[in-house]
Length: 174
Image (cartoon, rainbow, N blue to C red; front, side, top):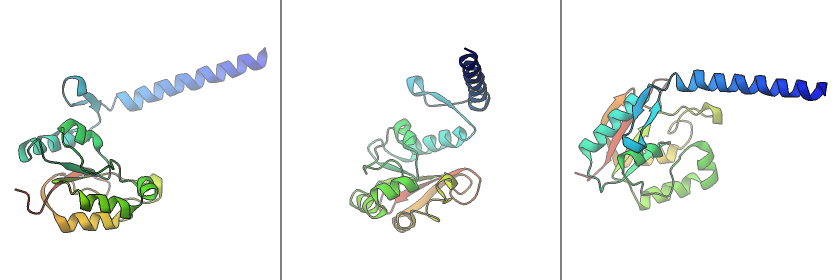
């Protein structure tokens, strides 16, 4: 009986701490609304950059044009209603190891997106820091060779700790 009571007490305390911590760290810092109507959600300060990127996409692209967001950012595809022409939605180290960088690159070459968006994502939890520098170099080199930057929002992405987004247009796209 005493053991069960002690275990229940520990579980209740741990659950309470988890709920408090999640609310404190998760909800308090998520105060910026992204999206509209049923697609809206609250996000942290990076949402300001995403909102600006969505505005730029709306201004610079047609609804039928495609968008590939790297190393991750399928939510931008969803909110902008722009199709990713490849079967890959995440280009983090795990996905490159799972599917193979060569296979992912072949798909990008066979079905090039009209626009590419590079969104800052620091990936040190995988043992490498930045897409294009520490992993995904062949993908990045292909993008640099076939796309040109048209707008930058915030800091240059994938360089340091500052957040930013870079929108690129494929050569030959009007």
